Image 1 (spheres, helix red, strand yellow):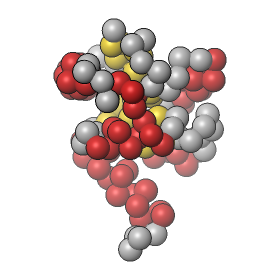
Image 2 (cartoon, rainbow, N blue to C red; image 1 turned 90 degrees about the horizontal axis):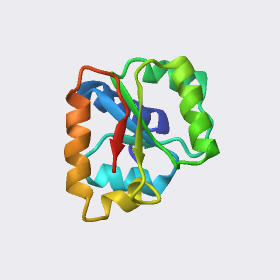
Image 3 (tube, helix red, strand yellow; image 1 turned 30 degrees about the horizontal axis):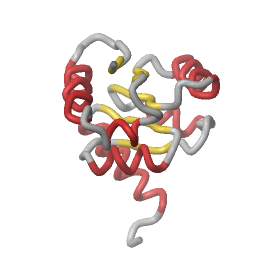
Length: 129
């Protein structure tokens, strides 16, 4: 890479601020699929986030969290909401994760629902069924 790791992170941060959102996932494949669809996404790679990550996310209008519907994912959502008022969960029960959803026939319906949610002035979770 021509850019340092920090410079690459800053580029994604700049894009997220410009577009007004970021989708945080708990896995690389979810993030790769989202990026391939032209979405702004980043992988947390687990259920840990630092104070630096929180500080960066405070400058992004909407922070979507797309994690598994298990105890670890729900705990991460609760923790993030303690620090960030702009967190919206992406909840869906059709597929295991965002990667599978974006590879499914429901992809266009999901992207349309995401676009509508992003345009909403209300801070509500995106529930896709």
